[in-house]
Image 1 (cartoon, one colour):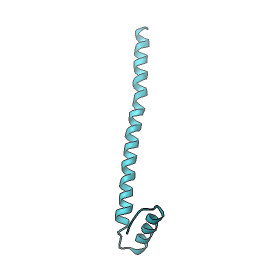
Image 2 (cartoon, rainbow, N blue to C red):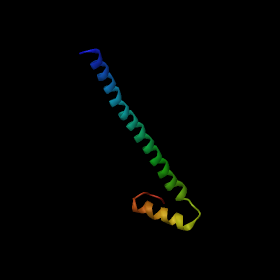
Image 3 (tube, helix red, strand yellow):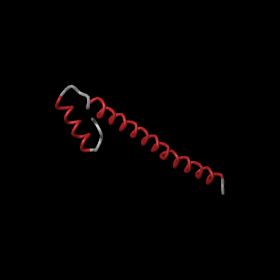
Image 4 (tube, one colour):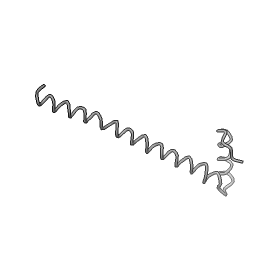
Length: 69
C-alpha cells in the first residue's frame, strides 16, 4: 500500500468511529432526560395539590400498573 492509501484508510476509520461515539452519548442523554421526566411526572405531578393534575397522574399510574397507594 502506498502512503496516500494508508492515510486515506486511517482517515476513513477515524471518521467511521466518530458517529458511533456520538450516538452513544446521544442515547445516554436521551435516557437520562427520560428518567428525569418520568421522576417529575410520578413524583411532583402525582403529589400536586391541584386535583385535576393529581387525578390525571393517578389514573395514568393505575393504567400502567404502577403502585401508588
